[in-house]
Amino acid sequence: MIGLPRGRAHARVLAVVLALFALQLGSLVAPAWACGCGALVPGSAQQVAVGREASVVRWDGRQEQIVMRLTVSGDARQAAWIMPVPHRATATLADPALFDTLNTLTAPAHRDRSHFWPQDGDWPLVSGSSDGGAPPGAVTAPGVAVVGRERLGPFDVARLTATDPDALGDWLHTNGFVLPPRLDQALQPYVDQRWEYVAIRLAPATAGTTLTGALDPLHLTFPAESPVYPMRLSRLARTPQSLGLYILAAHRMEPSSTIGGDPPQVAYAGRVTATSGPLAALAKGTPFLTAVNQEFPDPSRITGDHLLRRTATDATFQQVIYEDHLSEVAGIPAWLLTIGGTLAALATTGVLLTVRRSRRAVVPAPPTFPPPPPHPPRS
Image 1 (tube, one colour):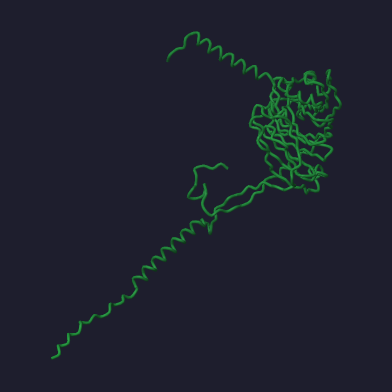
Image 2 (cartoon, one colour):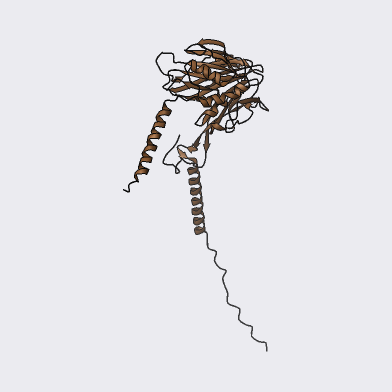
């Protein structure tokens, strides 16, 4: 083994020590976790992650409603969730059964489909393997006005106006949270547009436990000239993001642009026919449901919020997943029977032709007679 010069060895050891120190320091800083329509800010030296986010946007031409359910994990015992809204909002708790109903309604249809020729996985093409997310409002800071505060189950909800993101950061700090610098910068466009915020202190129902699992869904309502789904804060995410959005309106809807992600994919489009339950109540007056999925491989490219618009037609759509099966007759692949039968028929035909030729009668050649004797010459 060749030894390093002493100077280089010391430099390498110093680099390793600094790297470990940086990792340790980073573990003490609680980052914000950006989700589709807001940002989570955990308490000091705590971590929280959004594993899944489901959202419903309802728009009737005058008013917008957003229902959200977050599934979180981590070691945080509390977190602040900040949601920008274009106008003054009210907040209530929503029925968790709403999302169960939506999942059932928009699930892909499964249909059987047979194929004649063998595919990968069918004999004899069998392969070796198969592969089958103190409460806000307690103290105000200059530049922030608390316009409302409610207690909703385990949540303390404060509705704020802010003239600048620094003031919002001061307010969060006063109430036990630290506004990360990147989130501070991302909020500036909302401040410029004079949007308001809904700030919610998330805490588990049982004191002393951590935030984990699916949280109670929250229901926000605010005036809106056109439907919008806030997405700008998702550009802070450091990992690829997925958006699953249900849209209730009078007609089929779609995002007006990709805002820096992959093209949105429609998963379902159709009218809600339920007459009872939380979905029927929410869809009253806005009976057309559109489910959209979108991927954001590079969240830093997100350019703004999703503006939603009516599509050209109200065509219905449902995903179909086909279960392919090889056509069989009495457990035997149909293609094998067909080929075997064809070969057998050809073999039989060949045998019959051979036998027929062998039995064909031989026609004898016509008899030959000697030429007549020449006539004697006349005298």
